[in-house]
Amino acid sequence: MKKSETEDAISRREFVQKSALAVGVLAAPMYIPRRLFGASAPSNRIRVGHIGCGRIGQSHDFPGISGSGGRAGAPAVHDLAEILAVCDLDTRRAESGKKTVARLYADKAWARPDVAVYQDYHELLARPDIDAVSISLPDHQHAQVALTALMAGKDIYIQKPFTMTHAEGQMLREAVARTGRILQVGSQQRSWGPNEQFRKGVELVRSGRIGTLRRVEIGLPTDPTAPDNPPEPVPAAFNYDMWLGPTPEAYYTEQRVHPQGLGRDGGPDVASRPGWLRNENYSLGMITGWGAHHFDTAHWGMNMELSGPSKIEGKGEFPTNKIWNVHGAYEIQLEYPGKVIMRVSDKLPNGIRFIGDEGWIWVSRDGGAPATPSDPVSASTTGLKSLDASDKKLLDPAGVTVHLPASLSHHQNWLECVKSRKQPLAPAPIAHRSNTACILSWIAMKTGRPLTWDVNTEKFVNDEQANSMLTRPERGKYGALKMAASLKKG
Image (cartoon, rainbow, N blue to C red):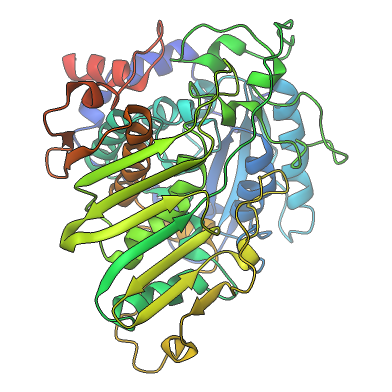
C-alpha cells in the first residue's frame, strides 16, 4: 500500500514495541499538538485517518469530517480537518475510500491532501502526523481498534454502538479516562438538524413540560433473515482472518461479511445492507443497531445518562440460521430509578415517546426515516411529526428551563472538542451506559427471565449465567480485553 510522503519513518515492529509501553501511556494524559492552536491555517487543521471504508464511513463519516456535510441535517461547512489516510481490510474498499475523499475535497480552496491507503490499521496509527482517527467498523472490531488508537495517542470518533460487549465498554471507558483523549460516539441524534427535534424534545421533557415522567416507549425495527449460503473463496484483496478478529473461526461467504459489489460512484453500495449486521458474532441486531441511538436519546431525556435500569425482562424471537441469526420480533421492559418504566418493542413506531402525568412528547427522525437506504422499515409513524405531543401546547418553547448544548454537526462537535479539549456531546461514559442498556436487553431476550442489575457494580444480582454474557471469549491473538490485560501485566 502507498504511504504518504509526509509519514515519518517507523516500522510496524517499532510501533508494536511502542504499544507495549502503553501501560505508561495509559497512566498520563496526552495532549493535542501545539500547531492546532491559533488562527485558521493549513497547519491548524486536524489531521485525520479513517479506519473502515464501508457504506457508513464513505456516506456519513467522510462528509462530516471533511466539512462537506453529513446525513444528520444541513451541510456542515467547516475547514477544521483534513483526511490524510484511509484504511480497510478490503483493499478495493480502501482504494474507493481514497477516491471519495478526493471528491469531497475537490471544491476546497486549499490544496487537497495526498491520501495514503492502508490495509492494516496499525500502520495508519503508527503515523505521528495523524492527530485523530475516525472508526467505522463492524461492532466486534470497535474495542480493539479503539484501544490501539488510544495507545497511539489519537483522539477518536467511533461509530455506535460503543462496543460489542459490556466488558469491552468498561475497559474502553477507563482507557479513555486515563489517556485524556477526546472520544465521540456516533450518537448523532444529539446533533440532529436542521429541526433539532431531539434536543428540543429532551429540553421540554427535562423542563417538566409533561409533569413527572412515568414511562418511556422506544420503537425499533427488526432485520430480516435468510437461508445460509455455502462457503466461498476468500477474495484476494481481503484480509478475512483479521476481519474475524476475536470472533470464532467461520467459513467465508459474502453473506457473512459485506457486499463485494461497489456502487455506481465506485464506493460501497449504500443500498446494500452488510451481512455482518445480522450475525450475533459481529452484532447483536437492531437492539444495539438502532437501539444505541434511541436508548441514548431516552437516557438524555430521562436525565439518566450515567445511570441505568435496575430490572430488565424481555423475550425475543431468534432464527435457527447460523449466519443471519440476530433477533427478530421482541418485547422488553426495563425499570429505572424513580420507578420509570421503559418499554422497547418492534411493535411500536420508530422513535421515543416520553409519557408523564400531564401528557406525552414524541421525538423521531423525520417521518421515522431509516438511517440509510438499506435499513429496514419499522412500525409506521403515520400521523406523528418528528417532534409531537399529546397537546401541541406542550411544545411551546416559552418557559423552558433546561437548555442543552446545541450542535447541527456531530463530527464538527468532535473536531471542535479535539481542539478545545472539552468533552463532546456523546463521550465514552455516556455511550457506555446507553450501550449497556441495549446489551442488558439482549441478555434478557436470551435468558427469557427477569433480571436484576446493580448499576453501581455493573453486575447482575445472583445470576452467574447472565453475568457470563457480559463478556465473550477472544480468538487467538485478537481481542481488546486480552490486550488490556497484557498491558496491565507490564
